[in-house]
Length: 447
Image 1 (cartoon, rainbow, N blue to C red):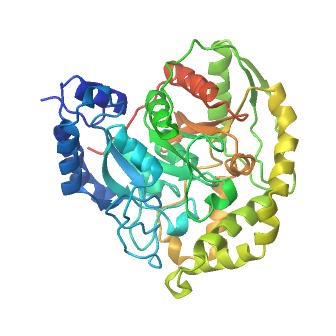
Image 2 (image 1 turned 90 degrees about the vertical axis):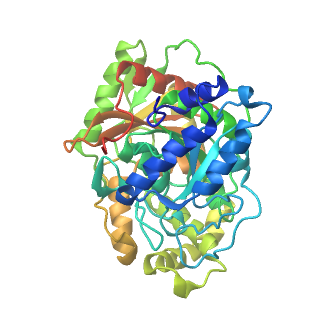
């Protein structure tokens, strides 16, 4: 019997369309793996076993099954996006345990494309932090369970890296796709503003948050992005020569990048030079105010999301984060500082097509009860290991995390690719070259 666990979404969908597999057998095999392994990983808050099998059976009877781009593909959904019939807890005890009456538009598009939602994945409370733990569960890195999977799409990333699903849906407001993807050896893209419908929380963190895919291959990211954006999945074009800037500098003053991550960026640059690209060392003109600007937007987004929730049911770190953010609401809402940052960055991206950086500054923190620790400890832990993602939420420009190399522990390392608005296809093209010339292991060896 053919095993579908560990196969890509593209491979599974092709097999279902060609009737070499049924949606039920694909979904059942992944549900069995979830039952056996998720106790060690902590990816899921809710597993929809019976509902997913029933939906797989319904899918098998669709007249258009042979045309569906994600036919029979199991998918996990981050627990801040509505799934019909399931509550949306956003990692908190303060949110209502009330089933959603309809799917979020991104979930609806995945279902329409033939995907089967097998569960909702764990997140930190209100999706604030780059570690995933809380009252509903702890998501660990399948490559190193002593470490956090990252956050806030930590459960979604852990599910894919553990082979529990081939693809997952997450979102990214300050790095929440790229951070866990980098930790867990996955490919992801935070699309530019407006490419994929957002509708995340109350206001998308002032337009900084974007929904996007988590997958083990560039092909799957391209496929899932096309479904989320409701566009045709274009075939990869012939690679063109690109002007690529390599920067090893932290955007945030006082934060250094550790050797494994700088080495990964240098090695990726060497691969791209051999592929024919024009690669130079060059740093974007990060302003000194970027640290305070990032903090203001990060906390203000939480202040908005926490409105209407019982503060007694929120963790202390969340209450402090929201309290600080309320002071910044009026200035953040104008969007002036973000527009100034975009104008400052535009000449750099007029000169270079792609920016290549380390994805993280160091490996993820230990998997601990971070939700029980103080606000400052959490902020310092997050800032010191993930300073490279926030600028591109503030600009609203596309950015990817791509696996490249490994850490001394054997866990994956990663690089980040950033482009100007509308450059998603170009970033995917460069990422696919890295994948072809420097392939990675797709799932963690849990068994």
